Image (cartoon, rainbow, N blue to C red; front, side):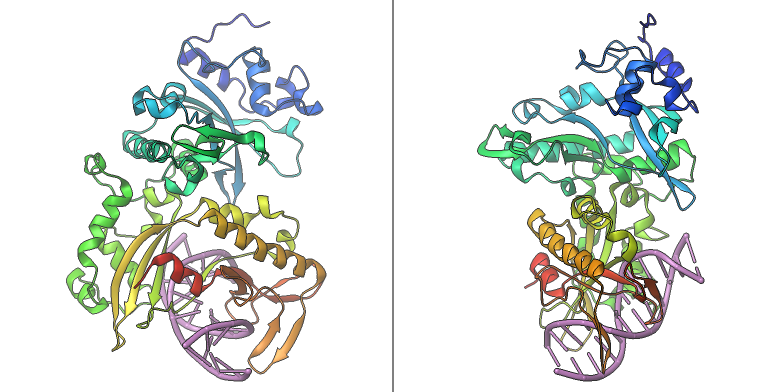
Length: 450
DNA sequence: GCATGATCATGC
DNA sequence: GCATGATCATGC
């Protein structure tokens, strides 16, 4: 039994710090990890803090008002990132909308978090992992404004009877992630519609958690911010702020924009330079604090004068040998597409071949279309396992990976420096690096250009 | 004029 | 030097 009372943040934090660097097998009094009975969070609550994990549903440290969260970080490219989103409380659709943000269950439970970060190390057993960093986390004010606006977006969908349409892509930092299996039991009722909605939980997005890890914990330098004065988004949202800033420039030609914004460049990234200038950013929009925290990926789209899209949209290359060990449901690409939000910056050619800024919009992939991408993904993996077939043609070496003519949403195509920029195939040999692309015809259906 | 293999250019 | 966003080129 544990007789210490964890009724102040200091006591809780002190105890948490005592676990830093101690292998879990030393902490785990009831062999939960070695026997697979319970996760690391349970083990910490039980063995470090002495709670009976079966009899508790209140905030973890009720008296101190703190929620304990044990969450993994992982090293990649010499930096730490959060391995996953931080899942918070399950959303009670029937109840949550009755409250204001500050009276909500979300806020009641999660206004102050004790974060214990452990390092996930591949090919090392759990019992040998340990807590790396501990932090008592309060949301910075500029984040809290955005989180409140996220919470309100989720509530607005519940009030509109559209809880079944909630998606993680709706929001910036605070997401509503699915929780539980896909079985019928993980569906719940909603107050303003008879359609059952998937059970979801509030969560802090992985990109947001990664930012916390890199900046608060490992002290990485501050990135440029788009919102310089957070009062300016108090009554709207981040997205509105961005769209409102760009709106006055819509309809202008690339030349006019360059003149007006003092840009003299003929660079291939001219369009993204234009957006940076409009948003008053010195560097790249994608490297701003808000874009990183919300995992917003800017994409430039060029529309032909006749309304077709000039090019399909490329994504990072995939690794032939690693992708065949994934399942679609847990795949890198599904994770990428599902968690990313896109800022589409759309330019359109006039009849005399000049580019005009036409439209700007935030976009994330609808669930049905994501499932279509899943089919393309599966066929890609199947083909890679079986062995890719090549045919020499007059315009290069053709392969039998999924083509844009085979699926309305996505296809696979090379994405390399040139045809010699190859990667090994699981069945032997190699081929030019490839990635998934969203079909140009599909993009057209999503951007609603007249 | 689309489909698809190939490649360019920037930034880290 | 590579990853990645963006774009070119040509045969069907």
